[in-house]
Amino acid sequence: MDAKNIEKLVIKAKDDILKEVNDRLPRRVGVVAVNHFKQNFRDGGWLDNGLHPWKRTRRQEGTGTNARHGPLLSGHRHLMNSIQAETSSGQVSIENPIPYAHVHNDGAKIPVTKKMKKYAWFKFYSLSGFKKGQKKDNVSPEAEGWKRLALTKKTSLTIPKRQFMGDSAELRVKVHNLIQESIRKIKDGIIALSAH
Image (tube, rainbow, N blue to C red; front, side, top):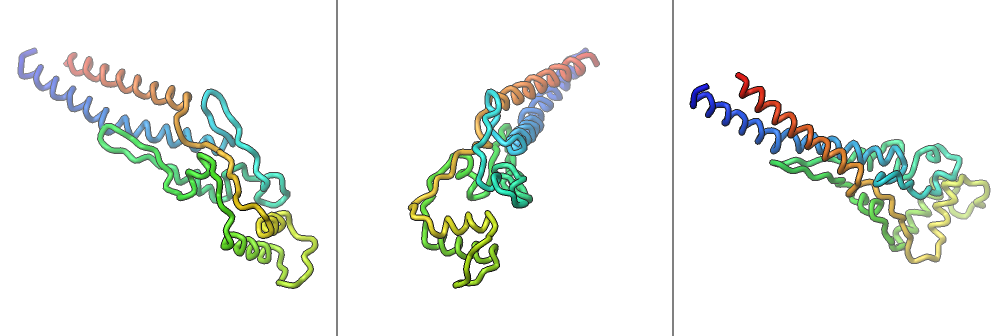
């Protein structure tokens, strides 16, 4: 093999390494991370050194159609399906642009406002079918929940932490394996090139 061929091999190997590190690997890591975080929703808990189940919701204790959905899940799965990977040269970041995502992921204390109570009354009346002034017996558990919120004396509500994104031992292992696989692929590509 002459010097010109060696130079071509080195340039080809360099280009392959840069393409893998700056483009392919971040995209693959992003897909793995997004799938890992979405799996937390399906499992109903946070996976980090084992599954840590989320606290059950009042909705799950009910008998309505929404009771069948796990914590943080609805029929639309909007919070789960909004997890996305943003890649740039050699890096990836995972985010959820939904404004309330961090409230569920980290937990929060939410102030009870007059506007919130007014909305609770609206939901109660729309779910129960009653009009103002009518007797309010035999209403659904969901309507009762809205009524409780409308009448609460609390000044704040505590949203428990139901982490679905963040650092996870299992995710680190998956990413480590992807990186090792990528290194093997680069090494095998260099060996294959040098065999020509």
